[in-house]
Image 1 (cartoon, helix red, strand yellow):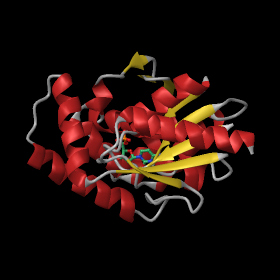
Image 2 (tube, protein in one colour):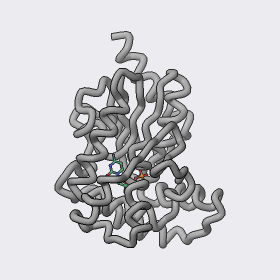
Image 3 (cartoon, helix red, strand yellow):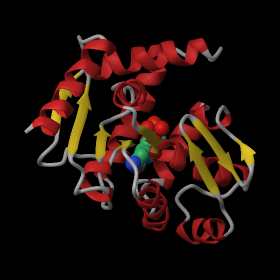
Image 4 (cartoon, protein in one colour):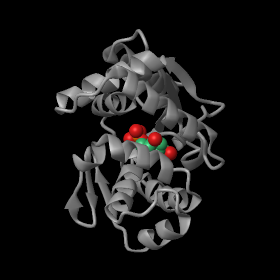
Length: 217
Ligand code: DC
């Protein structure tokens, strides 16, 4: 069974995916982490995140492995390194490059084969797993999302102003929603959940109800 969770940054996709997976006994696939790993590789090579030719040659000897919350780039663990703000911006840029999307889509589909997974990202319900049994699309107001991001960064010792985070978030939303390949939009059959004034536990319980009612139907 495949459950997809899509939506913009800061809507609580990762947390919801992890908690729902624990309740249902599913594995989790964080596809944003894959785009972040490609972005980190590009930044290290000092190449441009929009340069399709450079990206194509980089992808040729790039090995990305994701296991739950942990991520490896060519055998080096990069779980922490991919969470830096510079990587977030570069990830959104490499994600607009068709060669990168095709490369990662293959990895994502392989990860979903013969397993029960909850996969989260921007295009999981629309493009990568259109056949998924249950699809969610999470939203929240921009202010709430930026505030969540600020708190999350602070727990890791990165202190940023909310206005700065809001500006970067807007830029990333615009890029993710307007690219021509696999833009961020809800699948027609996705269940929309506004997480602005719901606790994580409320969101996860609501999702669990939907999954169980799909199962019992
Ligand atoms: O969810 P995240 O912030 O870790 O994602 C990083 C970037 O990767 C995000 O700005 C858009 C891109 N992304 C994507 O285009 N498609 C996905 N399925 C997941 C992430």
